[in-house]
Image (cartoon, rainbow, N blue to C red; front, top):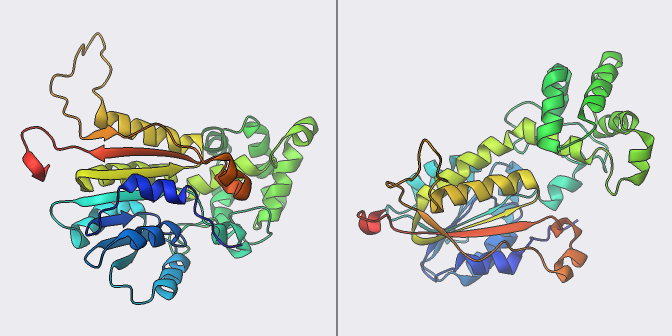
Length: 317
């Protein structure tokens, strides 16, 4: 399946692309947003694009060839600050885009092990050369940790039953494939819940394990802070998230950089607070038309913020 970027026009519009600006696509994927940004850049503009997935980088090299305005960098977006330090100007980046969703080729590739819809090795790593596959993680994880992961990262109400089912199954035989894991989860979930659910009973388990294996939320926290620091005054940060755990972290990071902390008895005010961001517009969701044409867009949420100069530091802030 070809990858269809979510909120493609809205996200690039929100970046407020200037012809000769310098922009960063922190999650290149299959280059849908990147292509739109390049369409709006002039000959002196620059787009830096990051991705941890070697297949994404190889795709970019094939599709964009010798495009002089594009710099492709293979790395996790938590390394954003280091990349900007090497390739970006001292004045900062004019706009940063983060699309936190998986690309369709990742989801549809059985070998990557992200989805139970295609039986394949239980891998789930964004970067297949780093970390441990999900199968190895499942083989060693304790019941307590697995319950916590399923509960907190998958918001799975049957976390304890599923964790016990996984540990019992792995005693009989290692869980090495996506189909095997999905079957274990389906057996562990009560029958009435399976039949009444709008989504497959293994959906939240797969999400939780993928997030844990890739340490996605920690990487997001680091990337958001690095992005805020990397922006030039007037530069925009645009983030598209796909589940509440991501969106909550994005919302909290933008709020912390734009609003003083709430007053408390111990700290009734924050006189030294200097906002670094101002939020732009409201939460953006895909239109009904986009959701109908691209079902993977249904859960998308987009937030936008703009870097402001810190008072007393001038344009170098």
